[in-house]
Length: 408
Image 1 (cartoon, rainbow, N blue to C red):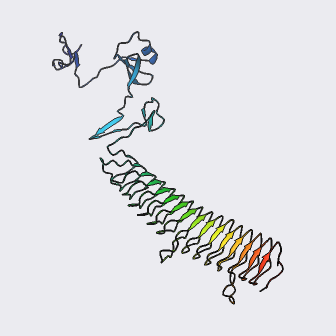
Image 2 (image 1 turned 180 degrees about the horizontal axis):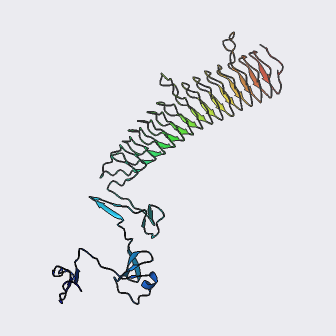
Image 3 (image 1 turned 45 degrees about the vertical axis):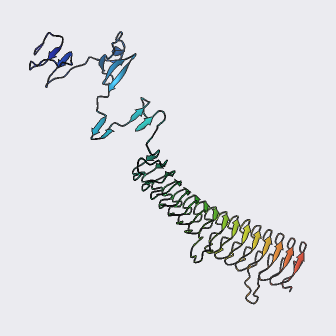
């Protein structure tokens, strides 16, 4: 054996004659060679009889060190340094990390629950998510996504899931699910936005609900609005207390308004219901394309498939039934109940100031061809069917006065 061997309680093996370190029973020192651990196959390792605790071998089958602990062999390392320490940062350069599992299926595989706790009871996941949050404030925020909740400092009770969602937020109790949802919100409270860019421009509006692609996308200070469906209330900026349910329902509401009462208190349920409405107010539209062309008309009620579909400036009309008062773009104060009732009525008779107004028609296709007649009361199937400009008439019963056109 090369070097010095000191026959004491401790053994030192070296080439410089130094004594063993006081804490070691065996102290080997060399700058040209190492220690060679016994090498064997896994079968040979497993055949070792009654291995001592801490016994170490190198298994050539997988080129890995193993040591014996309690009742089995445990892998010591892969032979590679999988962890890097840099200042106060520790990171892994291996491909996968398993916690609670020996066969991770992803870069990080956790078998069990993950608890994330901090003094503010908030959770931030994603690049720069909640970056400006002040640790120590009890905010109870859940923020997931790149730069989601980026500007939030003390706002509490918020949920943001999606890139840039609630990015500018400074307030409380908002829920944003989807990319860019409630992006500009800073002082708005109690808003719920679900869908890409829903309520993205909202700054101070409160208690709004937007569900769908670009729903209420332009809203800034409008309050207590409900928009459900892609592009519902898409152009609304400041108007409040609106309900739009359906694709593009109340799409143009609020455009070009100059007075506070304009574009307010509208309710639209159905595909493109009240689609073109910009200044009209206190309208109720339920059904496919109901009041879809209305722009400034007000106090209209339409229920069914496309009733009052072409009205633009008319007001105080009631149309119930498929395509009832369908062409009534200038009329007002009419009541139409039934399929295609007052279908052609439009008030476009320049010789009569009351053209197409103050009519009441009940029954399928009643007064269907009325264009400019006014002050007529019609009840019955196809009653007053051919009337065009007749006025001040009363027709009761199926087909009653159905062949008359100009009765006055």
